[in-house]
Length: 297
Image (cartoon, rainbow, N blue to C red; front, side, top):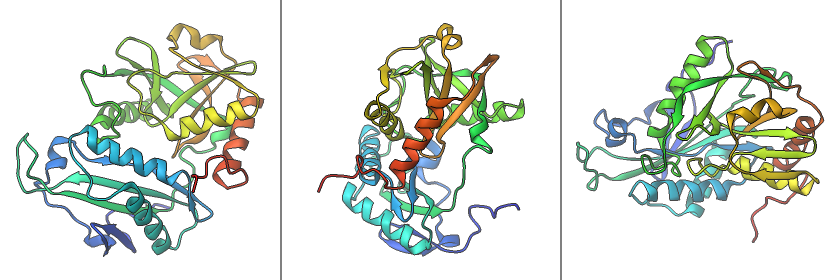
């Protein structure tokens, strides 16, 4: 079954404080962020009616805008409430929630300071990011590299920074791969187009923490879960030459959740007990069977 286009659906989207009919939530052609890539967004996920680590996502959204030089006219707590209301309005219990902020259309040109800042929250059903993910996905190596921290605002989850991710993802799909692994400007292992990566050797987990990576909320969750369950976690630079010397590999993200990897460009892995354990631990966390990620009151 082919899903409806995202612009042509029933329901409502929360926009600048009010619920608007889904098909009527439009922005002008000359919206600044459309032309100059300065929108910021989050990908939140709800399980059984609760949005996992919601406040952490909302805080990161606020900070992403600050890095790009503007203030979202809502606090993180107000964004939390908008997300909860949007989820409730949708009638969904398990859903993807997308808050997005952008500069408006009051002025056009590289300068941006006179543009109004807008915020919207949409919500829809989203199943598994990868089909048959427990089999393990196949990654190629992208020709695109994550840029140096003095050439892009890499700690902001900004729309413009995903241009090379789209190019890498589309080329991977066109050549028979599930996704692409990107290196960074120094040739270190970085991340996939929308997920962080972990490698496994014995009971050790190794994951990049390069200076160019977004501070991933799912990545942080997996580190905490691994350590709480007796795994040693090494957060460090990883070189491409090391990839053949690991036993297992998996990627993590709000959309990807925990997805095993069975191949990276000719290097093969067998998803095993560690991948299976981390899939289970994450499932326990997002479904509230453990409460180590609930915000303190």
